[in-house]
Each structure stands twice: as structure tokens, then as C-alpha cells.
Image (cartoon, rainbow, N blue to C red; front, top):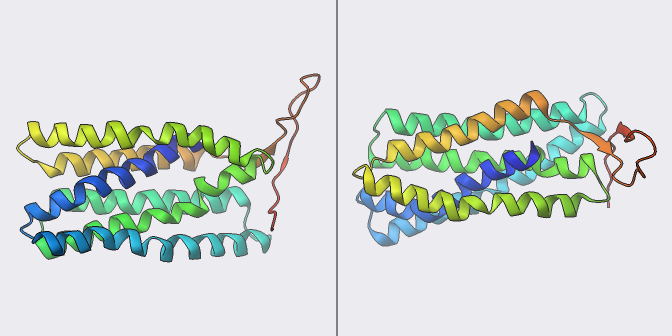
Length: 209
């Protein structure tokens, strides 16, 4: 479940990092302006992701909200908002300036998932979180190859119909968000269990360094 959401996050990240300048140029922005605007969402992302991580820690350490509830909230919000912005962008046919604002909003909302799937690795295995992340990240590199190439194929064979690209990305955000909201866990799994007994599952704890 975590790897699926990791895949979905990277789909939007890689696809739009690669194709956003092309989209902006087709909106008749000059190359200098398009380059600056294309870079802007990625500058703003930390200003969303860092506060999301801080707020999630405050909520969890207050013992008023469960860890899994916090993870689900930020993950679903961090995917649903971009999905909605992309659907909006594909349906209303906005002017260039409005399209840019909507696109920036879609990309900037995604780092809310810093408090969702990204931190969930630590919840389920503080000891092996880095290893689990590396396995997940292997899968999540696929969008950098397949997603970017597929987007080019779609544009070439649809007379540059960006609505298809936006709706596809929205769907890839939407489905994992729903599944995460239903099935995500935040319980520590003992991967060192020797197999003589059932895997030990305990409540996760926040570790500070």
C-alpha cells in the first residue's frame, strides 16, 4: 500500500517536472517565463511538506489522534487536492494565467503526504525503514521512465490533448488515496521474528533523534 502511494506521488512529480515547461509554452508563455514558473512549485513544496510533518508529530504526540488516523488524513488530503485541481484544469479550459495557478496548486499540495505514506515507513519498522523505503523507491522510479514516455505518447497521438494527461494523473492520485484511506496501517511489524511464532504486532511509537 505504501509503495503504491509512493508510485503515485512520483508519477505526478516526474511527469510534470518533465512536461510542465512544454505545457506552459503551449499556453504562449515565453521560454524564460515558462522556465521560472515551472520551477516555482518545486521551490514551494518544502513550505508545505515541512509544516505537515511538524503538525502530524504534534497531533500524534498529543495522544488525541491515533497515528494511523493522522497518516490517512494527510495522505488522502495530499492526493485528493491535486487530483481535484487536475480534474478542474482538464474540464474548465481556463485562460493561461488561471491554468498556471491551478497547476501550481496541484503540485504544491502533494507534499502534504510527507506526513502520510513517507513517514509510514518508520511507523511499521523503525529499524528497517530505510531498507523498506529503498524497495518502495525502486518501484516509484518507474513513473520517471514509463510516465514521462507515456505522456509524450499521449500528446503525440491526441493532438496535444492535455486533458487526457491531467485526468490520468488525477486517477493515479485518486485510486491509491482511497485504498490508503481504507487499508493503511501504522503498527510496528517485527521483521526479526524467527518464524516460530506469529509475527508480533505492537502499537507504533514516535522516535525522535
